[in-house]
Image (cartoon, rainbow, N blue to C red; front, side, top):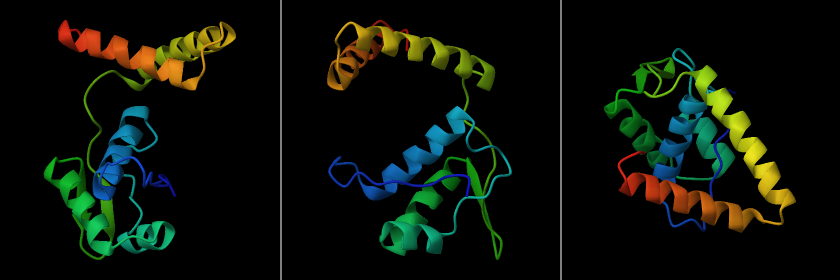
Length: 131
């Protein structure tokens, strides 16, 4: 299976949106590519113990956004990736971010410190119109 969905029941984010976000993240990171098949609704229901309508709602949202297409009798397939940087650029930035995380951890910052710092920088960048 190309994507293995996970749920964070304490996140406050609806289940169907968690599925949508995970597909989009997999597209951004290159884990999912055009032509890949998403798990069937039945497979997702069995692995996560959720209502089939929740999975169908997520897949409909992804279809509405033009990211996937349902093929009757065959399943749901990725149509296109999400815009933005190339996979090579993603890999380069990921390596830089991993180095930053290692350096910050060595300096004594824990997971929550890193999350707070990263979120603050993203928020500042968005306010400046950079991100």
